[in-house]
Amino acid sequence: MNDINFAILGTGGIGRRALEVSVAKDELMPIAACDRHGIAVDHGGLDVDELLAATEGNIASDGGTAIESSGDGIKEHGDDKGVVTSRQAVSTETPIEDIIAEHEAIDAVLIALPNLEHDFIPNIAERFADAGYEGVLVDVLKRSRVIGMLDEREEQLEESGITFVCGAGATPGLLTGAAALASQSFVEIEEIEIWWGVGLKSGYEDNRGTVREDIAHLPDYDIESARDLSDEDIEEIVDAHDGVIKFNDMEHADDVLLERAGICDTEDVTVGGILDLRNDQKPTTTTVKVTGRTFDGDVGTNTFELDDDTSMEANVNGPALGYLKAAVRRNRTDDYGVYGPAELMPGF
Ligand SMILES: NC(=O)c1ccc[n+]([C@@H]2O[C@H](COP(=O)([O-])OP(=O)(O)OC[C@H]3O[C@@H](n4cnc5c(N)ncnc54)[C@H](O)[C@@H]3O)[C@@H](O)[C@H]2O)c1
Image 1 (cartoon, rainbow, N blue to C red):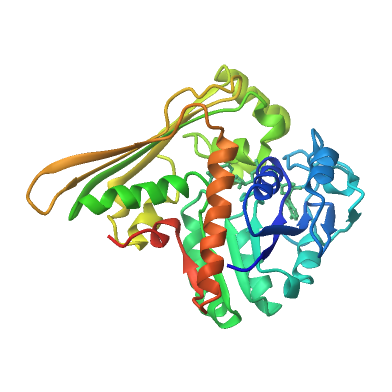
Image 2: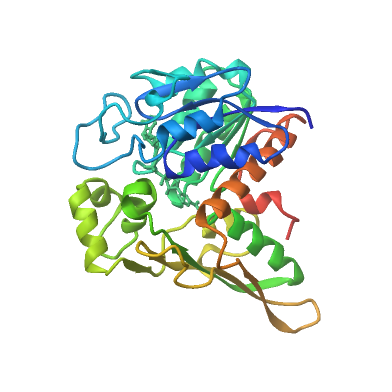
């Protein structure tokens, strides 16, 4: 495969690490990155070390405490933080538009933006298509509802020449792909259980989008109420749980992604997990269990486990960039449209 010039939308907890991981991935060259206040572009390749050093402990993050942004309805937080502090970057009020303006030089875009508005990422895809972008878009979103919104735009994406991979982080993403692979032994799936453990000693401060969106899965919250929480409210919720928050029956997109790959029905899939914001050590082992019936009548369970010592950032960004490369291969054979991670695995 030829070289891949890629861009990252969002240089927060996930986007920064994606840049770092990309250095170890052959063929990937980051040429543009943005956050809510700034954009860095270099067609010869960004200096990742400099960009990471400039944004270390200095992410232009989201919070519920500040003003409403003009165009996309997302709440803003922070001053001139983030990418603008890099010598490669300039300040802008239209970071996403500015990346779209570079589309002819870009083969693939990793969207590492918060997903606190269901239509935020689908609308970004639409804006790329409107501009005539031909290439790959990959997101790491978690919520089921967004996929339907992308499907509604599939024709427009196909006409533009866009291959979109939706939900390509860890879960959904790596674990959805693992479930798809583990399902191949069976002719009928009875149940798929995804149970994750994440330890983030760096806490809310360094993982704002991730923590806020996870809180939206707690019984007393939804995506709207979580979006409106102040930083102090979030710290209070974390304190009330002694830093360890357990989630059951989450509205994660693994279920719809497995259904659209023809593996099982959404109701056969359950997702839950434990997030520890005081320790890097995982509070529980991340496990995927696929129970099904074989062609010769047995019922069995295939189990897939992640190593307890591998970080969340490694498990999100490695697969995200791996799926990005898989999508570029498809895009270069004129295979356009919307895909989930399970559809890029062997067919059930
Ligand atoms: N699928 C998975 O396994 C998985 C795991 C972890 C996180 N995530 C998802 O990754 C996403 C990012 O999480 P995070 O912890 O990195 O969040 P974060 O808050 O640390 O970073 C978000 C970044 O997006 C930028 N941004 C926000 N709004 C913007 C706008 N309108 N224009 C330009 N830039 C904008 C911010 O400036 C920041 O750089 C979240 O949706 C989270 O749920 C997925």
